[in-house]
Amino acid sequence: MARLTRSYAALSEGAPVRLAKPTSNLFRARGATTSGLDVSGLDGVIEVDGDIAEVQGMCTYEHLVEVTLQHDRIPYVVPQLRTITLGGAVTGLGIESTSFRHGLPHESVLEMDVLTGSGEVVTTKPGDDLFDAFPNSYGSLGYATRLRIELERVPPYVALRHVRFPDAASLAAAVVRITDERAWEGETVDGLDGVAFAPDELYLTLARWTDEPGPTSDYTRRQVFYRSLQHRSTDRLTMHDYLWRWDTDWFWCSRAFGAQHPVVRRLWPRRLRRSDVYWRLVALDRRFGIGDRLDRRAGRPQGERVVQDVEVPVDRLPEFLAWFDAEVGMRPVWLCPLRLRRTDSERPWPTYPLTAGTTYVNVGFWGSVAVGPDAPDAPRNRAIEAKVAELGGHKSLYSEAFYERADFDRLYDGANLARVRSLHDPDGRMTDLFDKVVGGR
Image 1 (cartoon, rainbow, N blue to C red):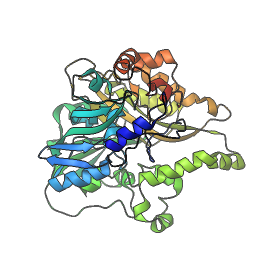
Image 2 (cartoon, rainbow, N blue to C red):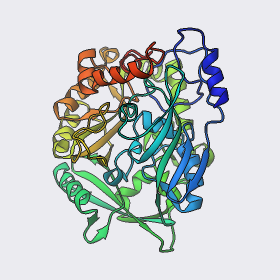
Image 3 (cartoon, rainbow, N blue to C red):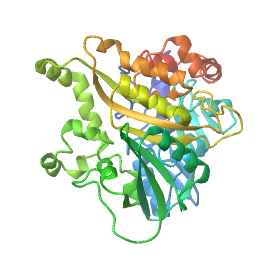
Image 4 (cartoon, helix red, strand yellow):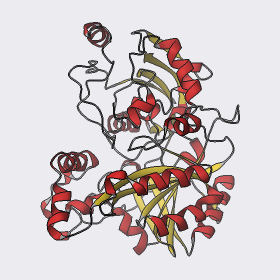
């Protein structure tokens, strides 16, 4: 904390306050920085005491889980990628298969310290303006340096059932039932997510925590997790491997680098089959335009990058997927049900105003779509934004956004965000959220 405050004081007067952070899980352009806040040393777990942990803001979930599993516990929601930080999941958004029970990562935070734009470290709790506006603010209100979070006790293993559905409507009905009953066909469901491979081939993976010993699968070797959904109805993983089942192949995105080809997979070291390695490869591609050059040489239409996660109400899921197939045409897509844990107001988290008591489904899709010369104008991404808003949903802001200012402020309660920001950053040292996510500043 001393280094952090010294680095703040060393910034030139009026300079933007940003992190000097070497890694990121963001997929949108950001302005270059020559200096920033020194957060080195704020990457650890301070203490685990029963069902509570004190954690520094830059601690990755990989390290956090490594510590909490020694106490037979995990955070209520563990996002899928190892290098997401706890502070990042709270100021951004995280989601995982326990979100149908526990909501989003910030909903299990009991207290946090935030370095604001004024240079003050503020301790804030649920119900405070700063705390409630913080989720989805992406550093525009400050940076979390310490968080006190709830933990869930877990056994060593996870038993899985992969249930196939013939259409999106029957899958949506199952999501409603499981979310309400926390069970399926008489068996408890502790984790719930799924994959839609085609309009008539959709799966929900039902996870049950268990301490029953037995053989387990290992998808860090030759087999690929998402393909297993199509080939087996049951499975079993250690709790550790379940939490990181999507990280090894970055869901299915590793196939773009050849990492799922049997020969390449044997040669690609296991320690380098992880999301942060693939992210660096994507960064190189973006820097040098490798993919665009290959498309031009092959005579393929110019591609538009479509990397998004959106939440739509579960009853509108079939409509969204049908539209998505017709207008975008990417498969597979990830499906993750969500219901807010907090219900003390209709929309308890104003900067990401989902409605309390409503079940949503996160739809995640990551890839490139052949568009042609219009690709730089992002027509598919703009259409997705409009459709999600029409259906009463929202989209996460970790990737590109193309909203007009008025629409953005309406969807993400810009007036309240500006009010809270003026209280803790009167000089505007933190970059405005719209300028960050739409303007790339």
